[in-house]
Image (cartoon, rainbow over all chains, first blue to last red; front, side, top):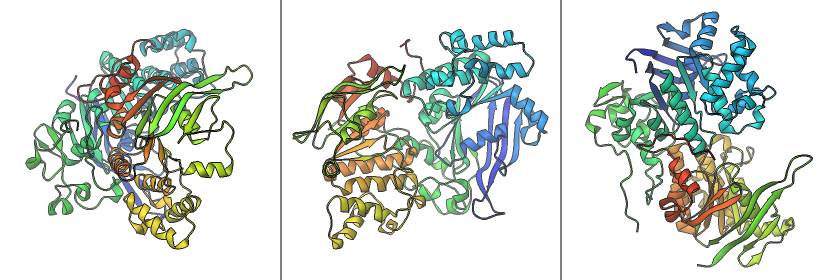
Length: 338
Length: 268
């Protein structure tokens, strides 16, 4: 893994037009900083409304009309947010690829798998036979059996897991440096999820690709990414090496998320819940966005927004991180069966 | 414990049209639910778990096999309106998506009152206090009575759906992926609520889910299905702790956790 950041997001803020009050804007991503090094996988975890998908979309500058992204998204030294249309188009085509949650929504149902895979190559001037050969090779790489036969099949003939592998093959077809995966396995069954993640993991390592992996599943992110960041209300609250994060969460929200998940081995009399509901960036109060749900909140949390700082192994945005270091629970204590 | 539901050799075939072959959605499933049980029906997509739930509710008729509820065998015919009302006191359901299972134009109070009236509470004087009682029993404040679903969060809507289902005082509550669409922090609140409701009212659960961690937290017994067939049925602790079938083990090993690495299954 290189030490150079391939992708560097600096002070990214995304606002959308207010749905009811013309002229007003709502913040959905609030001053996000993150880096993805060459060959590194970074997981970004959050609940709905945390801004994780918007962050990924801003990296590709795939934003709906009216949505405004400010700050810097540097890919290999160039700011994506300031590129002209032609440079942006080429950067998107050649340097990065996105994989979405629902493969069926992102593949043309009336074109064959072969058409889908070769389209991009044909546009860049690759001959039909060469493109077909490469597509078959790609299908082999993502472990689709009978690659030749699949080329003539239509999306409806393939299961969700197979189709997501076809989408991964398409994402790899232009030899990108960065893959953005937005909940790529959320619609899949667990055994299929394990399979698709294993394939993505292998290919990424073999090819030295960088990955930004968006998910709501902290355990999945931590198990498959080198580092994991946690988002809340449009902000990153904590980011550290995945193994360290699982061992010692440093932000109360991270710890809360870990504790709220039921466990497959241990039964708890009562799950530890985070009180209240999660908020979006525009609903957050002054100070720390998590303060209203946090057991450790004090006056300063309500009045001043915590900045990201290094505490222990983590980058964390919490006024009390230093005193809480090493004390936040990461998993349920085993309770003997009654 | 008294036997509430007995399912024997349940089978459901969807007839193919034209060149399409018949689809056996459920094939030879048998199990029992005793009062106070929490049964998980676990499986991946296409396993037939939802079809089983729909047959229990009478939304789908079995091709063969029997469903016995409190000693009475369910007729294989489409139920009449009166029969359906009677069944409402036996089994209620909470669906996955709280955004679509509530009427957007109906207030929370009206939704629960409707269920109460259909359940036989006809005296006006009783309706309001009972509605408030139900609402508070699922952890919602009484000032939510006049709220419409749009004003509620996903977790709050699912609480309303649970309150509405409990209004009929059913003996069995079917939860069809009822926490799957919720965020982790909200999901924990609803799981605690469900455990609490079961302890308090003694209602039995049939929990349709793909999430084994949820099964472990909420369910006493567990039935694993694959492609319409029963793979394993037993105490949750046994099924998850010491699965007798390779498929259950595969499902269990695919759940991400600390130290987990994604792996491919052997060619199925």
